[in-house]
Image (cartoon, rainbow, N blue to C red; front, side, top):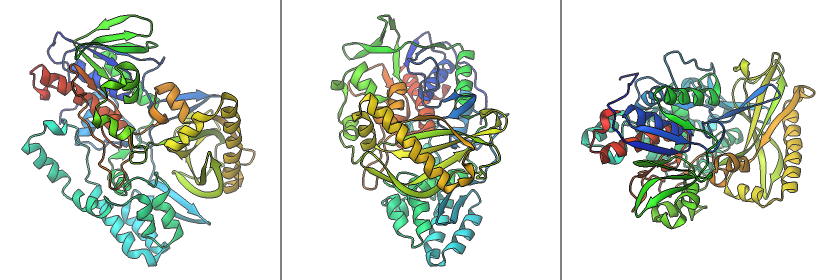
Length: 506
């Protein structure tokens, strides 16, 4: 597989991209590789979208990457990351050996990268659940072969492509058959031990289809989900540098007001400043509700797009209420993400009885000497966003401050050794994602796939509109960085096809 691709022949056409998140940057890089002129317009002072980090009190807070799917060489997605400059031959990965650990009434259960170790320890914990434990581990092994199609869009695949994909994922039908029609809560209900129930129901939103957990765990266990050192902002900056080195033009602090449409064709964009810029193609790489509500108008939203937005129950969205702390180094001993049961507290109308913690001691540059960053994320869904949205400015500040105190108390109850050694750095809510990224309902992932609901997937086109394409995580559930990255490539391949060029040119 070719690792370093170079510029193709000049196409003498121009692409305008709205949004410099991972989807927009990916489209920009592949557009340059295909020889197009490319201009990206971004409303924020920095590129990267939600693949971002920021500094507080001399500490760096990482917003995005917990593991990166596509780190295993030889996969098509790894090649995409190499094309984007996100991963290189010199990329270093964090040394960790577990997906996460659950703690309940003093007992611990861990999903180790070593599946044999996981199976052995879970069997020691609960002989009564032996059959379900063995079934789960076997199907995680099956799911480890799952890959995200990244060579080309599925609607552009031929019979040979499907045969090859079938060979690569020959065991995935077994996973879908066993876990495709149940939720994570249903999976948890198969177990008797309360710690195992917690292990399978509380890490991801329990509404998720159960196979989502197996695929995520299998990705990590197979070595295809490592954690690049330096964090989210560093990776975004590498991608930005790749785009600029290829001759792309990045315009920051330039929010777009609308897409200029002439009849059924996109001709360019108008900025909030009133400036207009024309191009042969426009790629929207912003939140799709922002596209439909502001840039082209809600009347352009066809039934395919309307369906998930009009069915919040069937297509929920995930966000989080999150806090970052500075902790004296050497006090907090956990090495991996932990989830622990706590005294219940409420956010809006929802009761929370579990909390997660992730330490960043493996990133010494994230904190001053003698310190480390510790972060927690309380999962939020659509109803939680609407609760935050209903608050006045004064109520919003008050509720945040009260929750900070409550959550810190829960952390100190579980880890009393941190008393006197922990200091708040920052906290943020779903409204933060809405404010900075125009994220619909503050979501940082695309639509959750629930049992009995068709997973959301579109081509990245809008019915009846020409020369306008969509990139970003919203084109395919569950979204996230891998989908954003391949969506940019797919958008350029659609343009190549429209220009009667081979999509294999990139």
